Image 1: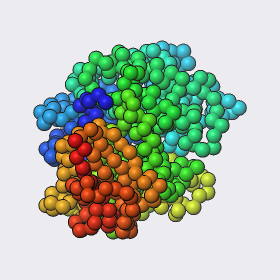
Image 2 (image 1 turned 30 degrees about the horizontal axis):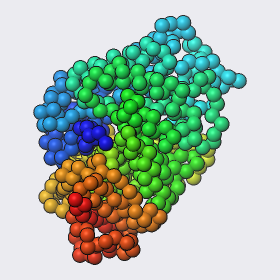
Image 3 (image 1 turned 90 degrees about the vertical axis):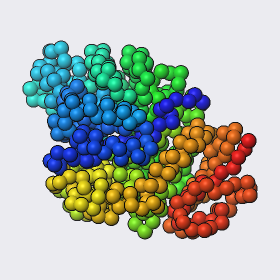
Image 4 (image 1 turned 60 degrees about the vertical axis):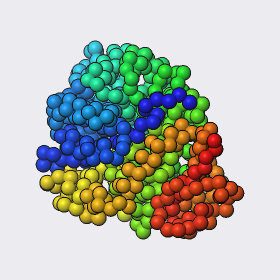
Length: 553
């Protein structure tokens, strides 16, 4: 397996709006990030990934871009960005930017020109279609609820938007669109950034003639209709040839609809496309027939098999991304751990899982201190456009809105977007004034300052585990094999190369477990655990994780 810096990197994702407010206006900003770079460096991470910081009307918090070459006024200036990039590089870290190439804001100059008339140079930059039978051109639904088409009176046509109506989809079939986006990428690489995370890149190629979706299940519509279109690999290979190949950078594509049938095609080292993708096998695992707000329970082997299948799928010439949360999903300790009686222990178990699997590791801000989901009492407290769109849909369908609010507590993207909890000061030390979205009330107990004081805190455990991964390269490149895969409480696996072998064992339950597995216990030494109790090697307290090691050569 070829070794490269981006395979060994640990990436720390920042949602700038919620990270640190240096100006006192309740919104995080670039100077706030600059002030916290020493903290980020202290974690041991290598790369910072910034969610979009470009000029935007913020219909979808920056994922609706008005000007790709300008910094959002709320976040700072171009000079602030240049200083941030220099300070990151001076500390030996790299910067990954967010590229939104599937759509723009409806306030982008391309779209304002496009909608001016049916006959103009920019009309074909987007998808415009006449209506059908008094309604939209097809039955496509938006990811955020409602139709994916918006009617424009001026030209008596509809435009396509797979997300909000202020995020019209770009027409990648038009070479001027593609080259325009490549110029934008080149602009940022010339500034010295180190790569791109590419938003919903799997959706940029649309099916010919935009046919109706035959599926009731929205997830099937994503996989079969919206994603992996006929020209997707032609476009990404062209992007690689014209831009990416000219720089020593890393790329990761967000891949709704990328499943095991498609994954290797995006990332195989011989294809000259992307370095890795974010698949959603484990992130959509609780989605019922109607999507994320129709959640279902799953058993541990289902969760394990996502990692098993993807590791097996990518091991010959590909590379994976390891993550358990980001700005689009619930807090990982609330979703995959126990954020109540076993909050600290289960947060450490999940950190161990993240940092012992094969693939590039991505951490999301606040997970390193065990930040949890927030349960705002009313829908008015929520900001996320997806949450509000889904609420509106549920109301129109006559759903039980009390039960729906419970699902919002469990699934809303705002769970991950509440302000970072720096201290027990007002507003969690995030800002001197009331922030753009409420702080989670548990900031008094869960914050950086409190955890810096405790050697056994989640924060210090992350630092230890990051250091441990870096000291043991077998945890990056070594082989992977799941053990006792059908066990419903234990997730165990081997990581090994020709010199060392690790067996990593996690008890994903609130119960004590004795793992009855034929392991030659005398050969192994316990090198890491998250629980300060004396147990036999294969006995586990609730949410205990153990790393065992033996020398092969």
